[in-house]
Image (cartoon, rainbow, N blue to C red; front, top):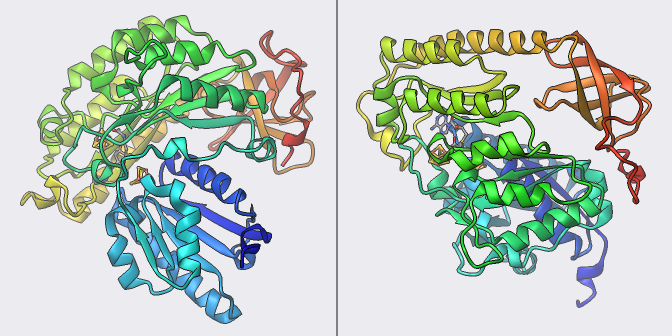
Length: 469
Ligand code: SAH
Ligand code: SF4
Ligand code: F3S
């Protein structure tokens, strides 16, 4: 039936895990838009459900099976023929197991095969259960279509662009080098073209993303490999782009050029997510992090010299095999010394196939839980101190979405805090200068200082009116 493809169909995509999955989900939706799929937020009315999964910790990976259980029941109850696809890092790591454990799944597709979705889907529609977890030689980015103006408008004024994927670092706890494959940087011209298109479509803030984004070494227009600092400088020049960020960085690749970019590029937001994982040199070595605690302090000192208003964020793992009380205390000491504006912290989760999972020195669950509670309390206090210090300060926020109450809009501060503004003289997609008047646990409240934001928030040729969600 050759008109099958153009029949209007509905797609529901659910993303778990990191920002790269969010970006990939959008690319999958863009690819399937060409096949006649429009997105829905209601899985019950979808013709195709995609779960874009995360394998980083056991809990994250298990979520996919409970979600599949729910979908199976809903599908049986409704007697529907919804197709179900599993994408992302669990698909890559456990493709065959998913097929075995969850007969409801029609299609498993790994992160490097998203450009093949239309053909895989046709095979699955033909009644075949399909698994594609190859790491193909062709570059999927060359085959993934760009979003339409309407799709970009719906996603809001802050967008992600993948510049680097995969990881060669092989931290001993981590599955990413196995699920995402070897480190690969996209060519500079393709990244710039994608960023320019997004800005032309109304995007005001771009976050360059990669599992190891500051290891970026994409081919420049001159044929030479460019580093992240060079790339940032060129993205920052795009007319109409107000804000630039990048994530996630590895301390080992935090070179002087990148630190200088924070001094030189006003578009680059004064916020750095730099995972350290542990404050103990012994544990950092066992994790194969390739840096020590003093290296971390040295980077932060240089960063603060380059950009005094920089705010820092990090990731921590407690209860890595062999972690003693003294090791944990070293982490607590690092937390107190740095003063993080925000942070994520996790109990170590042994992942199949990673070296640390084999260690005989696993830390008991209750010790992990106790350490996590202590660490999280300290990180919460540190975050709260940072937020409190913002009271009375004035900065630009980028308005991203409506608030809960009538007339409210929510924007993001330079430090990624959510800022609620009542009846702002501006709309979604605008930068607005506000003074922080209240500080709550999950958001700040801002009072507009002057309509229209800073001098960089000039009226645009193409207003982003369609961005209301
Ligand atoms: N590429 C990033 C991190 C990717 S994973 C980096 O190099 O820092 C995001 C975070 O999940 C990690 O920073 C780490 O803190 C946590 N994480 C990764 N593997 C984990 C595991 N096995 N158990 C617990 N936390 C883990
Ligand atoms: Fe995982 Fe380490 Fe690579 Fe980050 S740097 S993705 S933690 S292996
Ligand atoms: Fe998870 Fe894969 Fe991202 S394991 S954190 S979705 S790279």
